[in-house]
Length: 295
Image 1 (cartoon, one colour):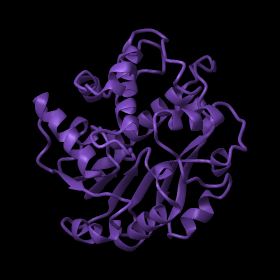
Image 2 (cartoon, helix red, strand yellow; image 1 turned 180 degrees about the horizontal axis):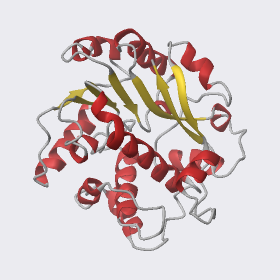
Image 3 (cartoon, one colour; image 1 turned 30 degrees about the vertical axis):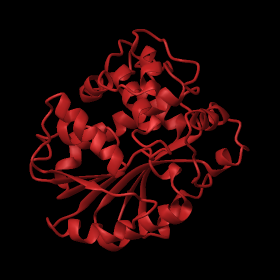
Image 4 (cartoon, one colour; image 1 turned 180 degrees about the vertical axis):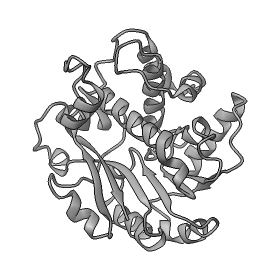
């Protein structure tokens, strides 16, 4: 998650944690996720912002009108896609890098699958310290193979730390950039992908999500697009990087990454919100896309 201008917490990181907690408690078909760590952390968040959001944890279909249409469904889709990948394939990777980790809990939740991997969480120093303190308060131990790497992506180049980390354990790497690149300037995004291009061995993979560039320009009127852009602004943060629709492969080609999977709202709805009777149970925000690439 991007670091806000506030000194001690990121509103977007706390909001995502709270919504993850809500999804863990869901009773609705296709809405439930398995992030029990977020459920624990969410109760320990004490910022004024988080306290005003706790109504999201109420049972049933209650969501604040401040949550843009389809954003909760996109979040659930993203959690499920990456969680399923960790469950089935994360053990293949010697090194796992979670960039902009926020309150991500996969190193803890999937520690049995990651026993042979080195896991690195790279995040803003203040956000990372806040997370570590929350885990300590809750007596949730970090796995011995997890390392916290403080980094401000707007001030430091990933290439300054990645070469050293990626050589600690030989083998292919997995990079998770969840809810990250839309908050960063284009030059910073380019430097992150360039560092991965240079340092990651062949066969490494990357999973990230992105926003269509026409959403940033206010030209996309598809389901939830205008609302999500305004929703981000309303909590004091901003999306500043997007990829033009249909140009994902061109973007990846620049960094020698092959497109493995691209999941837009229509694909996500069919995969995660369609029941056995082919009924659609939830509509996904159309501003956002999940991408999966292989080096």
